[in-house]
Length: 476
Image (tube, rainbow, N blue to C red; front, side):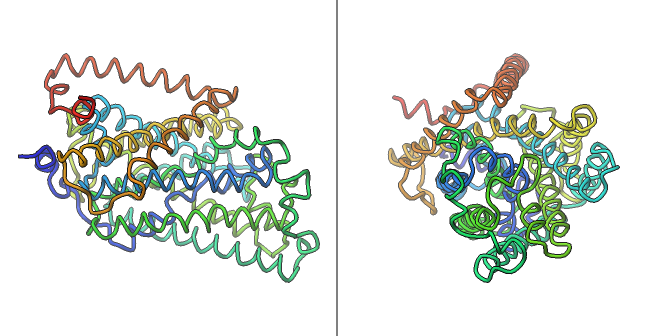
């Protein structure tokens, strides 16, 4: 029996989950999953830092994200499991790395959920400034928690329609922005011009260094693209739906990130945007379309709640994967009558509730704190995908594992490029005095997980004695 077959037997088809995510839902999760608060809200702060050059940063990061997703796609079609990259880290790097990656991805989505709840509360204040942020965050947390407990089909439908709203709205924004540029209607038409991209102190108004420093915020905006990998265990036909979802990534990045920002910065000069305000809401307020800014605010609210909904979904699955491998309490392996990991979701949501507390204690700083931690955790997850892909390709070349039906273009070379890029972004985070706090948090997190691993090994020595990981074979 091959190692791949052994793992397949350990994680049987569906792993007890209901394969309730259809093609249209997986496609829309892939299209809209990463369109969230990182683009709609955080872009305002990044525009203030980098000006029009932020467009280039999104394009550059988008290329790297495509490399990451094609690497993940190759692994998913080699062995589609709900544990996804945590399982691949376990297989190719060893049990500890699988344990560390699963727990870190769980942390990423917990803190991302906090960020989305914070953003949603900020958006509600646009209409109801008297409502405290923590009250709105708590209400949204409870409603989404209830939806995730019902069934994966409910999750899929919520994500489908929320993503549909986001995608339709972004396309509408782009069309209206093009109309303002072309026909000059509304008050914004008097100053809208492509030359806005360079005539106010150039394309790099604050220098290339300042532009590069926005990469950490840009990478946060792309968090969740890998969520399609977590859906593999609950997709009706992963062999067809996953490649299609991943191959649409380049045009999604070009249209929804690079295209939307380009239009916004042509319509409104970059100096008029400020941190803490959605550039999309600001742009439509300046265009002067009746109720336009309110409509856009509703869209970005939907985006934040959609991303938080995805966080509850993925944290529950990762926690159950950890329990399946003896790396979390066994009670998290249980599925409810509706085939959802209810206990794992409940505990994850309880930790997301810390975001409600932050919105009560430090509402003005809550968003910045949690996004930096989420970015650091996301970078670790992406690095593990890339390293696992490199080791998988070595194993295929050596004849130890079967080739995937969805090979990444460029093979391992593109993965090496992406690894260097992510390490560079990590260095930028360390250089930024405001952002480096997340590295201290991650260092504490790593220490806690290391202690936890030692305790697990003492209680269950077999946990670290599973089959030889591919990295040990590769270095011989």
